[in-house]
Image (cartoon, rainbow, N blue to C red; front, top):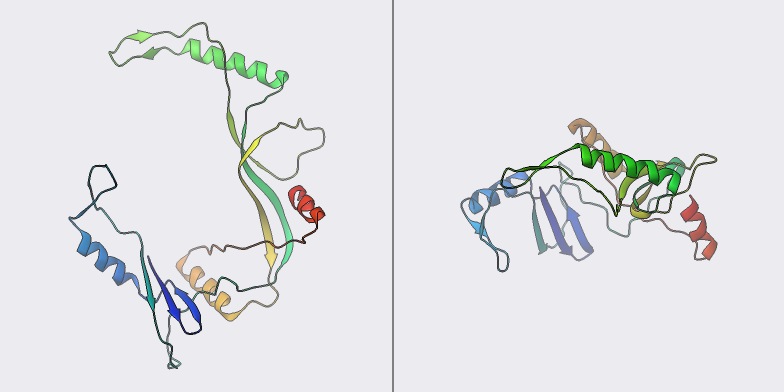
Length: 210
């Protein structure tokens, strides 16, 4: 719940453990009973503090070899890994359906609307009839290559990713320590990575088809 972002002589330092959980609890206690207001909005009572970020400058000096809070790796840190498996994953919207698929869906929708009466704000029950001009928007999840002979539907991607399994042949010590700590706490580790491809156009074509 706390993040320290410090500027030092050797560059920026980032840690989620230096400040410790007591700082967040202290901030929450000091803000209890107070309120926050957005522009032209109703003031809202502060309920909880989820995270505290501290930006500061520090000076580094040699320390002892005892227990110490780990620093996060810098943004430009590079770690090589081999992709040994995976599949493309997407969340998408589909609106343009071919007639063999669209027609039975429309009939099911019309039957469902006609078969279910509604009640307005005054408590009056009404039936809905003569359903027309249907616009159907479907949000779906997809993963893996399409099977042979599948009907291809044009869609708009909302989220596109590749669920990959990587093998790190020479993991650094800080990563091993983080994995052990996460395993003891029963938590997962989330890592943000940047995929680098060749500058040739064919590299982007292959990436899209993966």
